[in-house]
Image (tube, rainbow, N blue to C red; front, side):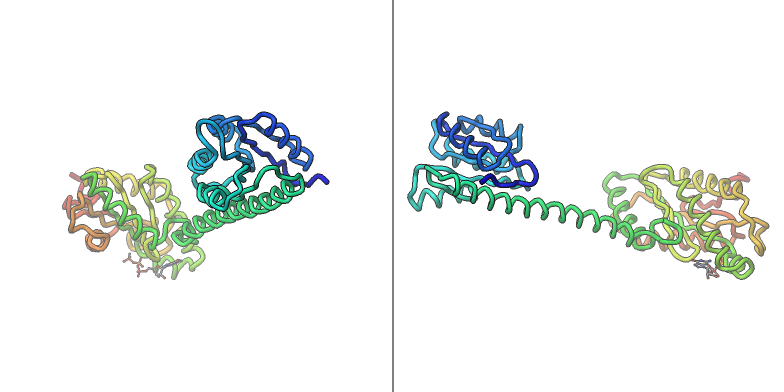
Length: 331
Ligand SMILES: Nc1nc2c(ncn2[C@@H]2O[C@H](COP(=O)(O)OP(=O)(O)OP(=O)(O)O)[C@@H](O)[C@H]2O)c(=O)[nH]1
């Protein structure tokens, strides 16, 4: 009685004797296999295998030229990480022959002649294994995807959608190493919304959250290069990691950022600095060496931020440049 294979099941029959190939093909068709490909040698088997990717290989051992052991080994080499069941069909019935077949990469070993019932039973068993292997691959892929998503979520700030502190720490570490390798300048900016406590106290926390989201959108937009990163560093503090950005470029970037923010005209309900939401920022730029660490960069940027606040807020300051964005405009 023909077996039902659910999805189409394809078999490659490899035997140097045409009569055996034809007889096996007939038997396979009788037990319900829709597609059977044939190959008369090891080399031909490899060609057909690569082109057709059958679900199962029935492989003769003794063939002129390359034998079945060689062919099985080559098939295994041709599909790293994959598995196509290989059943050896041979007239050799010693235990050592069976052992060698399994060692060479075969999954089962049948002694010719094989009755249709035995062949059907073996096909059924291999098909079951193949189904399990495919499910395993699918589940592994799903798991990898879920892990990837989870990692992304773990490094995302839910309120603003920016990279969070955890992600920033990882990326900063990576970028320091990269910049050190490339001997390229790396800039870190820490920015802080001015008088944000007063904003919250006056407009309420919900409005405060919306303000944080608007600033985050703007920071995300201004980071145009794929390697630039905008992160939410803390409550109302943000960090920008700008690879391959020298001191002068960092100041230009900070000026553009300030202009973009002022063009947004976000009202601040209670700021001594003015009627609009403003940012202060600390900038540090260096070509990292062995002494550079995320901590040292963050500390330097934080000190510069403190200086920007002390100089009157609504400006970005860089110790390396010894200028803030206001002085630079005036100069
Ligand atoms: N709405 C909202 N507020 C936050 C969030 N995280 C931190 N804050 C607020 O941000 C404010 C930060 O206040 P401070 O550190 O005193 O700084 P500031 O008022 O901005 O003053 P300066 O930085 O000196 O200009 C606090 O009132 C926090 O409650 C948040 O997720 N949502």
